[in-house]
Structure formats: C-alpha cells, structure tokens
Picture 1 (tube, rainbow, N blue to C red):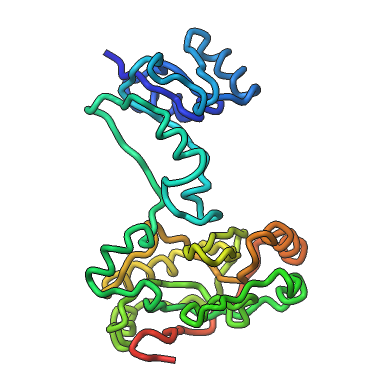
Picture 2: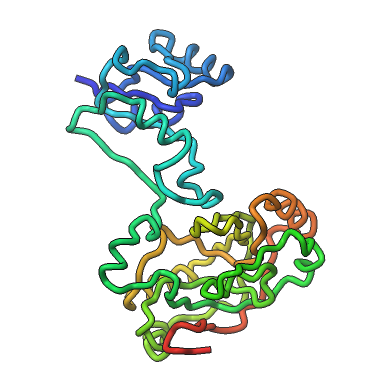
Length: 296
C-alpha cells in the first residue's frame, strides 16, 4: 500500500514529486494558495484536492496522511531572519492549526537550529554563550567596501561584550570555528591545524546575510560566501577542540559588514554594484580572537 503524502506550502509540487520517486508514496492533498502553482498542481494531479491557505483550513475535515512534507515560510529559521526557531509567524500558525499528525511510522523535520534556543542547558554548565572563542583566517579587506556602504547603514553594538559587531569590518576574516570554550589555548589550535595547508586566497562567490541572535539588537551581518574545501577541513579539525556548536551547519564565509536590519537591501545592492563576482581575497594568517587563552 502506498504512503499518503500531504503537501504543505506545496508550490508546484516538486517536493511531493521527489518523495514519490524515492518512496512508494502518492499525494493525498495539497495546501497551496498562490494561483500560478495551484494551476500546475491541478494539471499534474487533477484528482488531488488543494486546500489552499494553511491558516484557513479546517484540519478536522482533511484526510490523515502518513507523511507531511513542505517548504514552509522560513523567517523563523532562515539565516536572513532572527533564527528564533519555530516560535513565531506563519510557521507557528500553520503548526498550531494542524489538528492531526502523520501516522507514527513516518515522521521527520529539518530545522536550522542555534544554541541560543537552549540557554538553560548552557547556564547549568556555567557556559556563557557571549564568551566563546573564535579562530579566524584573516583576509584582505576589499578596498571598494568602504566606498560602497553609507556610514548611516552600518551597525555597531552598544554592548561591550559584543565587541566584534563593529559596522564595516576593517579586518575581514573567514570564520574557521566559532564556539570554542575559553579554556582552549592557542597551542591547542596550532596542534589540530599542524598539517593543515592554509590557502593563499579565498574566492567569494556571492552574498548572504544572517540575523542577530540577540533579541535587543536588530542588525544583519553581511557575508561573502566562500567555496573552499580547505576552509571546511580547518572547521572539521577545530571541532575536535572543546566547543559549543552555535549553529547546526557550517557555511564558509567572509564577514564584510554589520548593518541595520532596515538597511540590508540597499547595502546588498551597493555591494553588488561595486563588486564583480566571483572575486578573490588574499589570505593573511590565523587570528585567535580575544577569548582563546587571552590571545590578542
């Protein structure tokens, strides 16, 4: 018997189609309110009901399914948002409105988690999430960056413990590992990176931004995405040191600037106008930050 799939935020049904190619599964219903993708669903699955807006569905009337799949609005989880987890906005509404669940033999969820969602865990162990070590690979700062970004767009934290949040980054860097415990010393770093080959240049392929993890600071950190296997190798090696994994995935990047959240779009546009992607930056050397063993 085929598994029955409910397609939340179904779009044109791409995820549902992928599931049917991997599992013995078929769509039972969709929930998609946009007109254009709804027409695609109706063409390819003419007998499958589309229940429309997930916030307006009476879920007591909807067929129970084995699998619920969907790419939900991601403001609560995206690196471009505040990453509070599944607590606010459309995700919370959709989750609370759903009065039935998939049958228990098939379930799963993927979330973009952050350590800030579990503060009590770290408090019990005496770990201050604002005092974690960071190992960086310093790189040259693009000369055009200061000319591209207006001073009033830039954000500097008023909190002295967030001293690295300083608007335009005059010392650009690739974060190799953030979250090392304060008792890690530079010798530890040198030992795990002893036979690691430092790259001569890093190649920036595009822009992204992630939101502030601090509820009282409304900023975005603009980063240049880096595709380098050797950078990922350094991150893996540094993971053998005592650390708190702040985020559930590693995205190699160059930190370029911190800007007010309301100014991230013009800042993106200005950088895209000034830069020619991809571009390369010269790698300078390791930077231990100011937490690891008191290193400067």
